[in-house]
Image 1 (cartoon, rainbow, N blue to C red):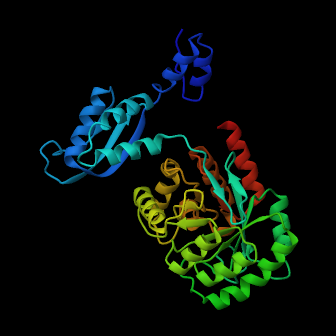
Image 2 (image 1 turned 90 degrees about the vertical axis):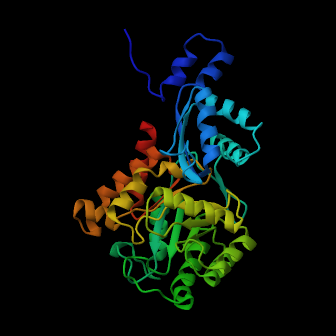
Amino acid sequence: MIWKLNKELLPEALAKSGAHEAGIAIFQKKTEIIPLQLAKVRTPAANILKQELLACGGDAVTPAGTVTGKDEYVDIILLGTLRQYETLCAKLLQMPFFGLDKWKCEIQNILQEQQIQTVLANGKVLNYSKTLIMGIINVTPDSFFEHSRVTEYDVLQRAERLLDEGADILDMGGESTRPNSQPVSAGIEQQRLLPMLKAVREKFDGAIISIDTYHGDTAKKALDMGVDIINDVSGGADTTLINVVKKNKAPLVLTYNGTGNIKQATETLLQKSEQFGLGKDKIIFDPGIGFGKTVAENLEIIRDSDVLINYGYPVLLGASRKSVIGAVLDLPPEERLTGTLAISVKSVLNGINILRVHDVLENVRAVRMAEALK
């Protein structure tokens, strides 16, 4: 009798194999091919990486013409087990040329097991032992999903309901980012947002609150009122906001608000995180569903969002009731809950850390079930 072991069952099978404990640890490193894509590798380095990984028992995918050095830089894909990468990195220690020392460090960093966490402005630590649910509170008159809008008369009831339903974070915003929405000034945003924020902060003292803004002045005033996270859909366009976040030691949700695929989103977010000089415990990546992307681009980002997990940053996905669901199912926002839940389950299986949603109760139930199956 013979059967195939999937990667979830393999650790248990190894533990029951009767092999020596030290041997099991070695076998575990040989059990799974880990594909790594390297961008803009100098051509001589690409050839060396391929030959050295082949010698370790792995392989590499390089563009035609790499051997002849036709292009100065190429993108390559490495295919190796953890054990093979360890051997490769040991070899690269002896090769401080063509940027190979840099690639050794990057390979080690991406494979190193890290405890992903976020340190809030007040020093409290968010751990991601489960997928967190961020409940949306729109204090705007024109958000795309009408039922998510609140006024000063019902904001406390909405916040209480979302927390009771299992929201880990409340996300409050005073400007709509729906397609074709008109931008508002920081002053108008603050008139809408700050009084309601003050009420929610005072009544729910222990709640974790994020505000959705790209204005530095709004961020400063909100942080002074005890906000925990700044959710910037502009991707850090306002340097004032970045300086405010740094000064207050607050985490920043860094959104990719351009068009393109998951590779472009990843490269842009990584570049910006380095540019801003914030630590991994102060940045949360958001690949930005919507923001002018095509349906195909949005679907690719949702499907391949696990790529972002590999870089050691927490990842947030906000696709709740968005137009990509409407395009696929031909439904208005009011009927997109089931499509949202499908994306939430896929996101859990991809390892996404935070889901930003309108319907907290339904998403909490779907997410907890998906986690049990995972």
